[in-house]
Every structure is written in structure tokens, then in C-alpha cells.
Image 1 (cartoon, rainbow, N blue to C red):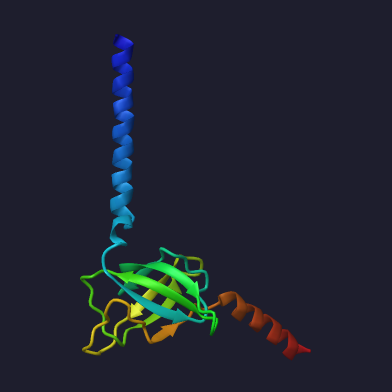
Image 2 (cartoon, one colour; image 1 turned 45 degrees about the horizontal axis):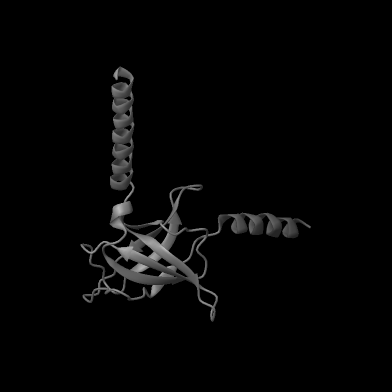
Length: 151
């Protein structure tokens, strides 16, 4: 009888710890924030490894995330779908650029709101975008171009 009570209490403690862990993950990772809000699209020539789930930031603050990526078969550009927090209203001349936290940091989309009085609605597409900067191709170009000049 004594063993059974100890096993029951141990099992209850393990379950309580697991529930606390899942609540912590749910509240601190933004998993619960991706469903609400409005969806907008942006077209980029190069996503530079940006992943589904990456942050959408305005003034450095996360306001949404990338929910889908697909390739436009006609012009071979990446079409990203993003969900933006419904409390954030963005002008329709907002621009987007893919950037990262430092040289090897996480990639995200930085939004820069324009001055229009017309706000984006669910399903709209951003007009001005700037693709990810490919630092390695720039380094390679610099190295190989300088070698050609030295010959």
C-alpha cells in the first residue's frame, strides 16, 4: 500500500512538471499567437534561407510570423504569406526586407511602414520588398574580381 502511494505521487509530480513545461513553451514561443490576425503576402527574388515560422518585426518588435512559402511558377519568385497581429494596422505602402540578427543570426522580415492613410487588409500584397543579401556571393565576387585585376 505504501509503495502504491509513492508511485502515484511520483506520477502526479511528473505529469504536473510536463504540463508546466508545455504551458511555458506555449506562452513564451508565440505558438499561440500565429492564428489570430490578418494575412498579407510579399514577393521576393531570394529568401536567403528564411524559414516558415520566422519573425515579422516592426521597430525590432515581433508583430507576426511567416506562415507559408511558395514558388511562383511563372516568374520564379518566392511568395511569402505572413500573419500580422490584428492590433497592428499597417499602411498599404509598407515595405519589407529580409535581414538577420548579425552575420550568422536568425533571419527575419523587417517592415517599414509608409505614410499612406489606406491600411492593409487581409489578403493584400506588399508592393515594395528587398530580398536577402547574399554575403557569401559578395565575398566570392570580391575575391575573384580582385584576382583578375592583379593578373
